[in-house]
Each structure stands twice: as structure tokens, then as C-alpha cells.
Length: 317
Image 1 (tube, rainbow, N blue to C red):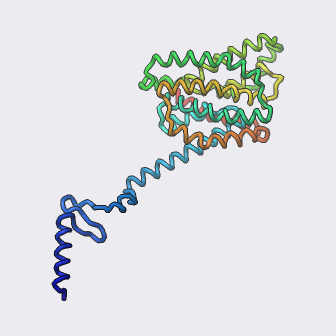
Image 2: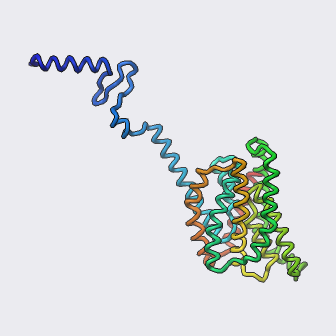
Image 3: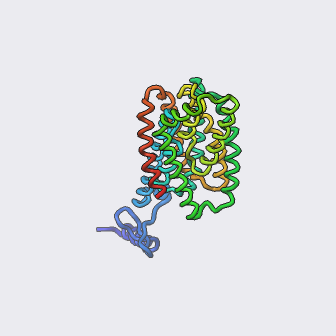
């Protein structure tokens, strides 16, 4: 039996509920629309709806996948000097569905930072020939700048640009795969027909090689690794392979940095993806650079060539 004071308090409480909302369990519902009315503390600390929580989980999962991808590709680049553009760019296009032009630009900056760390490791182990690096850069840096100027004249976000970039990327991958598979045959051919190159001619051919790589890398982000190393083996057969790999990685730093900055200016960079890739690639290339002498080079090259043939054919068709 309620006394008069209790009845008065209940009537006042019911009036407040009619004015502000109605109760369902411990939650107050709006009298007009039925939506939950949260207190300030509940609003500040509330749990996200299931759809928002699922979306955030998906985003976090993708960032982890990007980081793992960056680690694997970075380790491969550290071990062989090959795989930065030839693997990362097609992965971004085919696996993650990124626009081809944005994938090229993102991969260029990814390669600049990743190979910059790799250069520090190779420099510490004295496996970089800076004379070769200077010659390559003398041709690649101006060629990259000129290519970027030409690219700025076109609408890179158009479907036509996407198709053209995909096919150029696929063609570069197929050429890279052929260079990996037939590297020994190419070396034997050039040693037979050009047994001794004069130092001046070697220097000029190195600059020309750098120019060709500058154009290819600026358009497709592919070529600095496999094609660069193959060309250096032909031009400098007296140098150890590990030194050529280190020199090729060091040369790729200024080339990919300038080309990447150019694509950034043109607006074809995905900074979120770039940050996630670098999270994994930096430790990856450190590990790969230290493992250079422990992994069979031929096995890696053949496995990479098989992947490049499949991916290159997929992009060209």
C-alpha cells in the first residue's frame, strides 16, 4: 500500500517519462520516434552499432594485410633487388582493386622508402658501388622528370589511362620475367659478342640504361629491379652479384623518389595504403638484406619469374 508521498513521486516520474520518453528495461526511449535516449556518459562511452564495428574490423584487417604484403615484398627486394614494382604494383591492382595509376604512384614512394632502408644495410656491408649508382642516376633522373612532364598533359584518372597503364605494366612484367628466366643466356650472348667493353663505352651504356629505366619506372613502377640488375651484370661482369644488387637498390632510391613525388603532385597516391605497406616493408627489407647470402638466387628468380608471367599475362589480356 503506497502512501500519499509515494503516489506523488510516481505521478511526477510518469509525467517526466511522457515528456521525455518511455522506459524499456534500463533504456529510455524517445516518446516521438522510439529511438534510445543516451545520457552524456553513455553517449561518450557508447559501443558502436554492429555495422560500424564490422566496418572498423574490416578496415583494420585490410591494414594488417597491407603490412604483411609490404613485409613479404620488402624481404624479397632485400634478398634479390627484384620484386618492388614487379610484385607490389600488380598486387595493388589485381588483389586490392586499386586504380592502376594510383597503384603505380603509391608503389613508387613505397619503393623509395623501402629501398632507402635497404641501401643503408647494403652500404653498411659495403655491397654498393657508388660509381655505378652515379652513372645510372645521371640517365634515370632526367628521364623520369621528362616522363612526368609528359604524363601531366593527360587525364590520369580516366578509364583510358587505367587501361594503358595496366597494359604497360603487364608488358613490363613479361619483359622482366623473360630477363629473369633467360639471364644466363643473355649473359653468354653478350660475353661472346662483346667480350671487352672499354671503360668509356661502359659508362655511356650505363647512363643510357639509366634513362631507359627512368622512363619504364615512371610509367609502370617496374624495371628498376630485374631489368636493372640484368643490365648491370652484362655491363659489369667483373663485379660480384651481391654488389650489383646493392648498387641497383641504391640507384632505385633517387629514381623512385623523384617519380613518386611527381605522381604525388599529379594526385595519384593513396597515403593510407602507403603507410600500411611501409609498416611491414621496412623490417622486411632489413631482414631480406641480411639474408642475401643465405638464399639460393636461382630458386628465387625462377619462382618470381613464374609469378610475373601469370600476372603480366593477366594485365595485358
